[in-house]
Image (cartoon, rainbow, N blue to C red; front, side, top):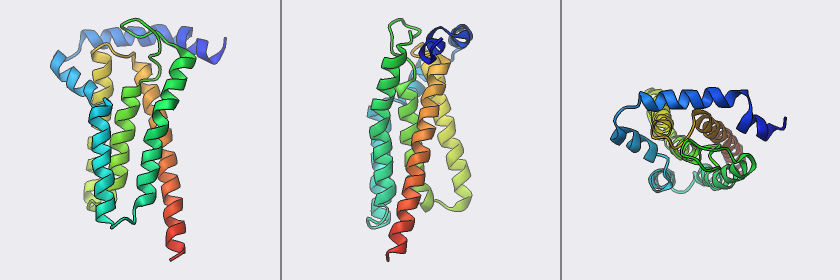
Length: 187
């Protein structure tokens, strides 16, 4: 059985679909679930990241361009990576149709909100950083729950989107750190 078949017909699929159905049965109000799901819309998440990029550049008088650029590249790579995996797996979603794995909305929320905090956390007092990361994690998890509660995705679609976003944010942060060290060494 090929990798894509495991994702679309393997032993986890039935459990994933059962979990998704159970989550939808116990969902909170439709309005709350929709607001949470909408946090992964590009029209919501990307402007938040853009504001964080602008604030980071303004605060540093342009010296934080490597992390800003790395976050922009991470967001730019996210859509084609998600689209490629969706085309490769063509997993059926809760509402029918194909191309639901991984969740682009879950990846968008995680990359945009995580990237925003990566850019803004150096300006936060040290004591505020852990609570800020906790808030971002809660928003990202809330977005994923909203996507499942509304029936837009199965739980593993959301988890796959998060995994992709962690990879993109890790590479962006590591690349920015290396670029910052090189820039500092050349001064």
